[in-house]
Image (tube, rainbow, N blue to C red; front, side, top):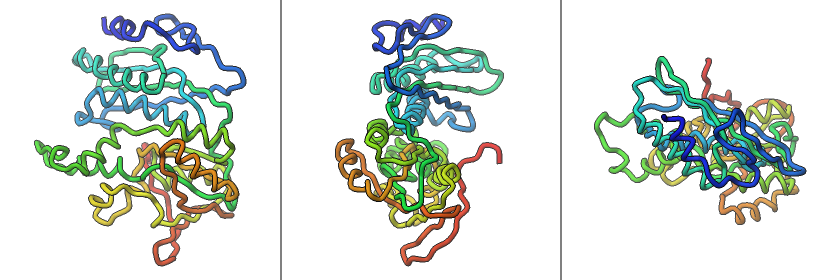
Length: 323
């Protein structure tokens, strides 16, 4: 059966933190002394989060990667995950095999084993839910930013959303990825994000970040979460927002995706000004770029500053499922 096939793939040598893995009523994990347990879950639904353009292997990879990113945003390390999958009866076995191959690839890279899950029939469409467990010595929450803190991001923003938009605009039957290396880069950023685990751990354990979140709903939308939880405002310098060369070449001068596109899964965090010098060291150690894009202020909301110094208040427009 499909369940037995999955079980056989994940049996074998388990990391020390897993006492009992897949196959029983519940998994058993051994928590590390002095660490906090982190738990996060994400649901991916066909027609909302993915469609036939995303191969099952890539879907499996992304489903696990975005959960690992949630753990990274708290300053933690992933330890184990569970998956629940609902499939229409006509789904081919090969789809499931490829999906779990994607899981397996990410599992090996981040040393995070599958320890349980569920499989069910679905009347319409595919739904995939991943729950991840992690641990952290020091947790960084969204609610910690104070006036005077710097606003920082890792990596570049807007790539994933711009890649998705350009693929949706491509004509049916075309081969845009083979014809356009820039689009291939952006699409890869969409289907295979890079969780900033090591960076998140260092920002947390070295006491550098005062608040942190990963960018799933867009820079402005996720920054608003930090501001609301912390009871502060922010000023963001538009020209400082890091964008990739591929983004610059394909965006047509529009920075909408960099501001509000989402699914970059970069870290967005605040840092007390006196700790700014620590950022270069962390960036070098993790080989990850870190950019200061603004500052926390008293008040509420976000002010965007353009290249000429003109300020405008903005209403965040991130991804929203229910209006």
